[in-house]
Length: 282
Length: 85
Image 1 (cartoon, helix red, strand yellow):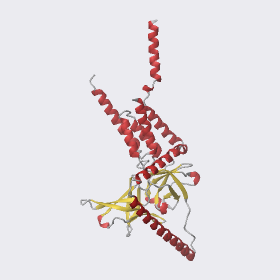
Image 2: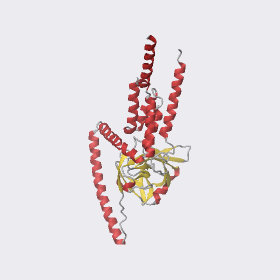
Image 3: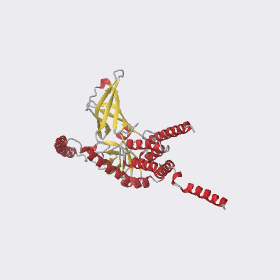
Image 4: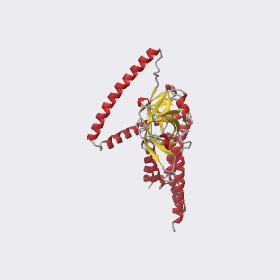
């Protein structure tokens, strides 16, 4: 009888050990979950992005709320002055832009040239840095909306941001010019000095140039496209006396951390050829 | 103990999806003290979410995660073997 009870106790203890939560390893569970997520992305990338879009929207809301929270600690008087300055600057630029559009139209009419204004695909940004450690944007527009690999993404004011590097049926990924190891060929300054722009991650760019080139802070950096397209401004020049070159630190014209929509369009091969990263359908 | 590990694990995954990546990296490192596989798992998850082939050539989040997981396993092994029974 005693042996029977002892065996029963041992058996129950073993059974409980199998079912008990104390034997469950959160690390192994996490690894299985991560692998399942990875397989879902590899096997059904469109479904994967559809599933995670609501999560990315929550991320957006949190980023916006936290920005508002931290901004509330700022100097309100200084912010008001800055706001007024920006409003007047915006108004001046809008009227200047309108004047240029009309001038372009009249010149085109005079020369008998069809308007060069092209429409693009307006796509909302689903995920962006800094949640992403890579400088990529996930857009809520894919093959079904007409997005194709190699199309250029433009932010507000027609500033080029990057190129479409992956497409699914309903989503696409844009690799920003600031992505680590992304290389773009362009020009800097009024003298249009050619330079190779490297992405350094975190929304910033850099380029190495000869000290004698005479580049200064606030010079504009351009990339090819239809004409020259401004992508950023030189904000700092790092100089080492032992080196013949200087390192230009470039900040993009449009902050990729706050971009909420982009315009996608194919502007020809000039910009595509100057930008070197691989492309994929994943 | 197990509840704490669970909270750390879930927080790290939620952070990977909604918070800036440095916050996620910190959480994954904190979780590695109790679950050595966490940095690797979080790295895989982040690459599943954000990696686009061709960017930096390698999925760096997974690789860094793997390195930190190996370090965490090694440190835990050393600590266990150094305990005098």
